[in-house]
Structure formats: structure tokens, C-alpha cells
Image (tube, rainbow, N blue to C red; front, side, top):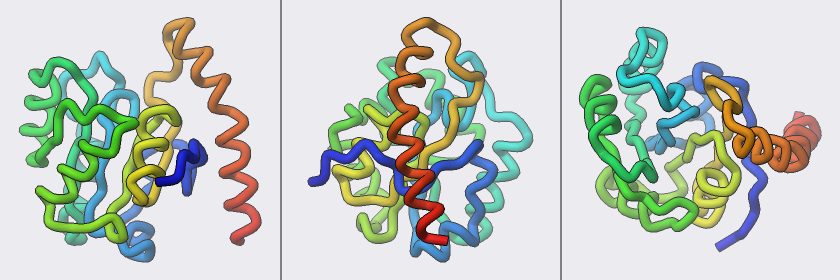
Length: 170
């Protein structure tokens, strides 16, 4: 169970993650954080771009499931219902229990799973500990609060390390 905070891949936005990219990585299940990953926390319903992206993944045979630490499931339930995808609530990231439960529900294993998120200390750490592909995006809506700005600054060295590793792979 690695304790690495470094994502496997770094993207500007979820829309950069294509079905082809996921298929090439052997991914059959994409687990995703919701807040700031797929939509700003203040957004109650998915926008057309997100709906189209989810539809494209589904059409390619890639399962998508939200894995959320949200304390209240109302927003996540509505959001996922609108998208027609399941979610695993009270995930406890960076614990791996939510990711393991989601993989069991989807009937797949870690070798065929990726986790998409915007935070190193929850999403990427959980992904790396669970042994799944760790895909990181820049947060939608940016850092609004002083605490979020501090967290983003602390993430910078780990993102830089990810970028250097990606450059070496090319």
C-alpha cells in the first residue's frame, strides 16, 4: 500500500481524459470525485459538457462511479441520478475502503480501475494506496478560500514531479 501523493497523470480538466486514453491504460471503471473535479461544489446539476463526457465514456464501455466524502448525500444523489451513474458515499478518502467497495459493486479489480480527483491528500493518496491509476485534474472553480489556496500551493511540488515523470515517458 504505497503512500505516494504523486498522481500517475495530470490534466487541466476532466474533458482531457478520453475513452481511448482509458482503454489504452486498461481501465474499465473510472471512479471520480465530484466536488471541484467534475463540477464546482456550488453547482447542483451536471452541465451539458459533463453529460456528454459521461455519455461518451459509457458508449465506450467504461463504467463511471462517483466516490465521495460528502457528509450529506442529497446533492451527490441528485447529481448522479441526473447523469445515470452510481455513487459510493461516505468513502473516507484517503482510506481505500470506499474505492474497494466501489470496485466490488462494479465487479472489477484495481488493475482495471482509475481514480479521478483534484486533491492529493484525499483522491490521489486513496488511489495510490488502493493500487489504481491516479488521475488528477486542476480544480474546477479554482481555489476560493484561503485554506484551498494553501492546499493548492502545497500540491505544486507533487504536480511538478508528475509532469517531470510524464515528460520522461514521452
